[in-house]
Length: 135
Ligand code: HEM
Image 1 (spheres, rainbow, N blue to C red):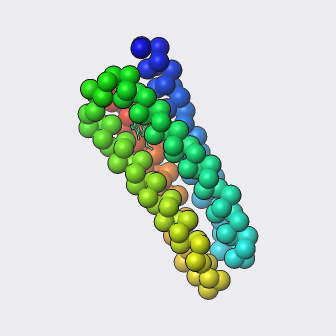
Image 2 (cartoon, rainbow, N blue to C red):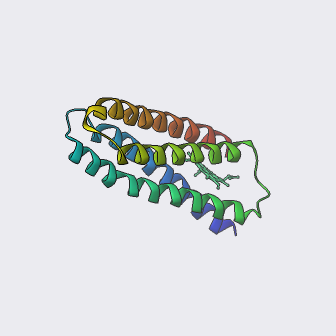
């Protein structure tokens, strides 16, 4: 059980690192000079892999909790789940807003999109810091 826990912990930490890198990459992937079609294509291109890594974080997190029979649900884990949910909900919003986007709204959408990835980057970075200090 110890081996399962330590391997999964490494994977969990790595997936979090990958998500952080993806958030930084996504931030630079859109700009307000893009036309509507290219912008939508780019959002559709980046979101699935973001969701995939998010689900891998949830999966490994649940395996970690399973490995300790859900006995270790302390404050830091509750905080991780909250951050995870926030990132997921904002990603869904990013997609929904993009679906009905019009050309005249590109500027405000790009501002929203960039703010989303700045918040994700800061949240993930801070959460990683707290988790590595506490775990
Ligand atoms: C995006 C949000 C998340 C971040 C940034 C995050 C980050 C981390 C980090 C950096 C560690 C320590 C890894 C290591 O020491 O190698 C960790 C451990 C852990 N995470 Fe997460 N995590 C997130 C989401 C989740 C979720 C959704 C769950 C549960 C469903 C979860 C459950 C756990 C557990 C159980 C541990 C081990 C705690 C222990 O050793 O007692 N995490 N997490």
